[in-house]
Length: 260
Image 1 (cartoon, helix red, strand yellow):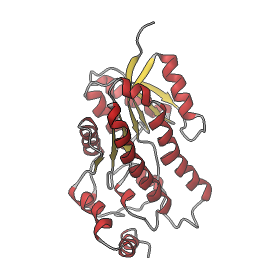
Image 2 (tube, one colour):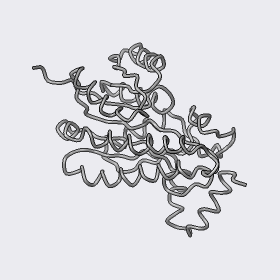
Image 3 (tube, one colour):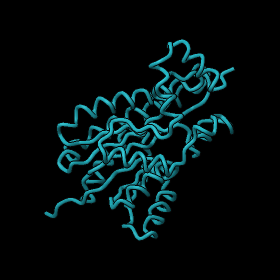
Image 4 (tube, helix red, strand yellow):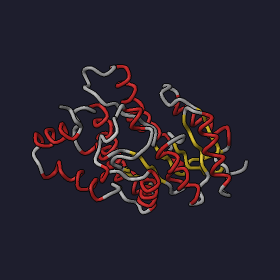
């Protein structure tokens, strides 16, 4: 039997940071399996990568909100003769508003996607990642370093991703598996519209392009960095909870997120 082909799995690869990550990994010579709900957008991303002279990525149109989604990804890998070397957990979404008034089912679905699915895919393929000296890139957020009135559940999910990734970085390092949490600030993608953020929600100085975020995330993963926070303003913001009282952080975030 032929050896399986090594691939990088990228979830949420149909738009925004996911597309930028697919471009960066492809340009660095990685074969890809792109996963997202929207088949047409996935195929367009794969075709654009092929048009640049890179091997065309394989695509898997799959709703990660389905309870069996990680198992279906594993089954597809096996059926296609693929083995994961890197896993990029990019899929996720946020919601703006008071937690008590937002749709509870949607918030639970967000927690499921941002935390449970990411955890499953981070752990499911560890033997393959260790065998092939690969790694895991988990897309968190600078929001993960502080509570967020106005986006309470979203901030909580990203705090989980940061904490989980940092611990996994230490646990898997002896096995040769790199684990990096990529923690961008605002990025101009469809995420903002999905979350219900109005224009000008964040100061422009905090924003970074999806391409820059993807490049810094890739470079950090390959260097074995535990945390990557693109942009000086965002790195300073992530430090504030270590320097200021918790109550003051809540007050600042309430103003920053225009909670009124």
